[in-house]
Length: 171
Image 1 (cartoon, helix red, strand yellow):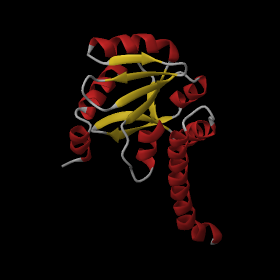
Image 2 (cartoon, one colour; image 1 turned 90 degrees about the horizontal axis):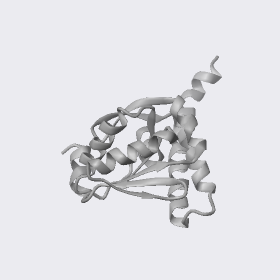
Image 3 (spheres, helix red, strand yellow; image 1 turned 45 degrees about the horizontal axis):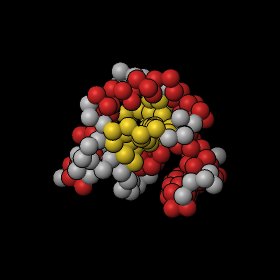
Image 4 (cartoon, helix red, strand yellow; image 1 turned 90 degrees about the vertical axis):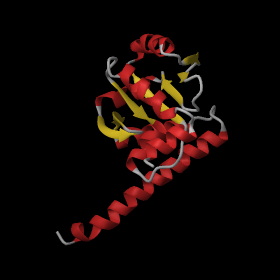
């Protein structure tokens, strides 16, 4: 079984919902993946049911309407919009925090759940995780997950530094 097939089974349709999302976003560019799924693109992946996204803020009402038309339930919050398919456990979260708009200018295409999607550049993923980790209004458990993601990225960077340090010292 592929990772996408496992995720589809475990989330009861999460890959199908993610695919529908990507189709809608492909006509509402620019957009990119941020958050835990984006972290998973750079380090050893861990399980998450959240797909955190950023899109051009003034396109979010249109995106929300298109998602509702294909069966997603939409909830609006102070700093985000949440979309959820009727049966799947996948939670799609669009941030409305203006700081994340910069991620739209620096992204790369990666394979996520069987789809080729734009993912925020690593430095923007790190910034977003720092902002989330420092946000005292978020639940402690969410902030701990952000801290874990930052530690996972730090380990990746340490591994690169160990790998290249001998080459740097021989110059």
